[in-house]
Image (tube, rainbow, N blue to C red; front, top):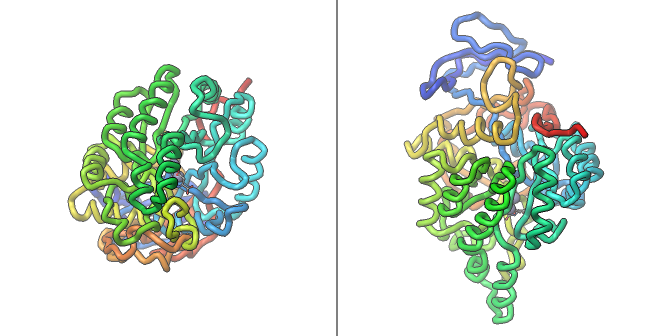
Length: 445
Ligand code: NCD
Ligand code: ZN
Ligand code: ZN
């Protein structure tokens, strides 16, 4: 594999940007030096660019298989690389779902050779400890629990079944990731609404309340704490839920750029296209979430990249619209704009997209620019102005609640395992991504 010299990049040391040269070799960061003369097979002149560790997106739906019409391993990981993400964590709500070791093996073998960013796979949480252990052995990165029952493997409203499943996960030493909304409660409100012929976006929103999220998060944190299980709350949107996470040992959480930067007014412009769960909330809730995120109390940024077709998204009846929005190609530009505008420190952005995701998901050679670490690097152009244009996405989902938004800063070069894969929104390199396995699983016995 050829080596790359990144010449005169700005790197973040403590809280300051300083000039350095970075040499990659054999897929690893070989040397970072201010003074040593370095030589590579290829040189990227990085004057004016900021070199960051390749970003890690802990919440991505790559779909593929029977949902390949929404997204494939190629299109999803090209979107990741173009957006500056060198590693993504794929979710198990696929068809077939990642609910067994056989399905995980099958998914991994289908993905092999088709990845433009690294991919780690989340399996579904199950009650069977033997099956979870097999998935851990195959390299699952975490186990996902949908409290809204989006992926029914067992009845999570049954406390004893849920406890059994969490015990089983604890034995693998892998984190459990959670969709924190109570599905029974949502469906109860939905049925009432439908019976009264209420089908608007507002009716949909009234079923996905903040209090439903807080109650679900409180319930799972209580159970996890009693087991001292590592728990990670996905796409958190309510300050009260974040505060519960902060009070629980071994618990972390993520927020998406759309929940951090958009409010209810997005529905006036985009209607059902902006529907996702949990939904984009009020300005008061958004502000509260932003404050906690910018202070580091929401651990990480994750996109919850959830591609669907335009046809599935645009429905008269809001209950019938597919929920989820793509985010891999907008997260960095919209968040970097906040850095440029002084609303977020670069340090905090790096912590939220590189360092903490690597720590939470036990990716021991990722998340930092360090000699010997994987050569996953993104060179950000902090001055480049772009406008969010979904027609240009590599993702098959050509819509965005950020469409039309002006941004400053984007991924100029994305290097995955020492190969240049993307340059200013274009895919220029090979499918250099690898299947990434957990460094944490306890697989013996
Ligand atoms: C996700 C999807 O489409 O798979 N949708 C969403 O609205 N967030 C599922 C999920 O993350 O809960
Ligand atoms: Zn979810
Ligand atoms: Zn999701």
